[in-house]
Image: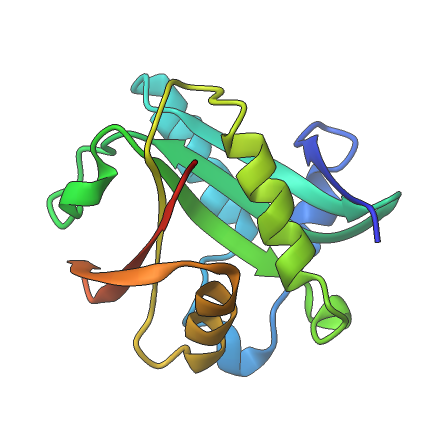
Length: 161
């Protein structure tokens, strides 16, 4: 496995938007087209939003989007201030269960550790209470729930070294 993050361009836009999760997962993650629209709108408000197609070599397998610092949303957790957010993370249904979660999170950590928007102590993310698989994957990687919520979602954090 060789996980690569590639910027969204006109060349891969349609393919990224066509990625899907299983029907029972659709309430857990926004469609990629909505995430891309949020990234565009956020950048227009000078909010750091960095979306990428996730590839295994040349095969598109998923999508990831990062944020940094506060997004100025009312239900945002305290941990958001001055830290990185894995805002969206999905693996297409055709590639789930093939061992991509850990390498994808490792690559995300490596990207964040370049501090593309500024220094930080933590990476944070959130997930639905019902998403037991997300909780398991993030916990195994080293994320810990910090007691905060983001709307109705559980917040989990990873301390950067």
